[in-house]
Amino acid sequence: MKDIEPILQILWRYQQRLVLSEDEVLVLREWLRESKSHEDLFDDLANEAKWISDAPPEYRNEPEGSLARIRMRLEGMELS
Image 1 (cartoon, one colour):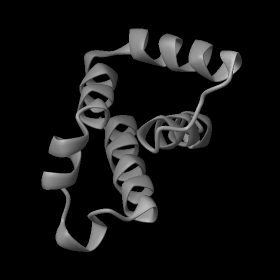
Image 2 (image 1 turned 90 degrees about the vertical axis):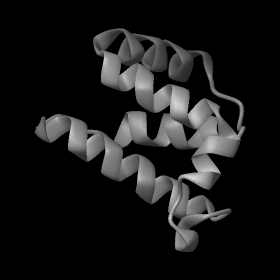
Image 3 (image 1 turned 180 degrees about the vertical axis):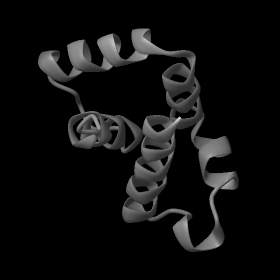
C-alpha cells in the first residue's frame, strides 16, 4: 500500500488555507494527474461550504475532523 501521509498533509494544509511550498505544489499536481478520484477529492476540498455542509456534525469546523475525513477518503481510494 502506498504511503498516503505526504499527500494527506498537503491536502490538509491546502484545506486549512496554509501556504504550500513549491515542492508541495509539485507533489499535489502530480497526485492530481494520477486519477479522477484524486481530482474529485480536491474539488470537494476546494469548495469549503460543501466540505463543511457534507461533514458529520462532530467534524464540522474542526481541523482534526477535516484531517480525519481526508484520511478516510484517501484510504478508500487506496483500497479501490
